[in-house]
Amino acid sequence: QLQLVESGGGLVQPGGSLRLSCAASRFILGYYAIGWFRQAPGKEREGVSCISPSGGSTNYADSVKGRFTISRDNAKNTVYLRMNSLKPEDTAVYYCAAAYGRGNYFTSLTGADFTSWGQGTQVTVSA
Image (cartoon, rainbow, N blue to C red):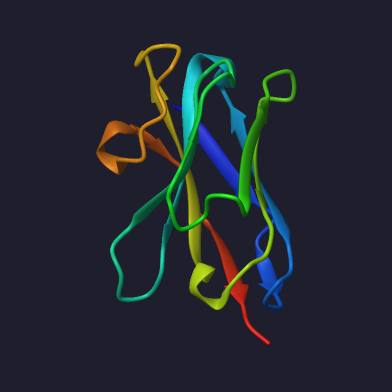
């Protein structure tokens, strides 16, 4: 069974930075598009960013463009989400998810397109 484990969340002040990691076990991450999603209390899940299997294509929600950067190191079986200039509204549980067999340029931000999900990591942006 596919396993994804997120790490790197925590408490940070507004304007600060964090780097989230999504590590895979029991499968080769390079075959999968990986998306990052987030869900704040009382809100619907939101697609944040996605990277294609090769890393050649990326996609970002408008709310994070210019502040967040997704990247992957397939040799380490890990995908990263670098988050800069964090705002209180970025507070949420962040999840990574995997999608297989959707093509080399697949970068969806729709959760229903992803079949395997991690347990999430909490990000809190507060003074």
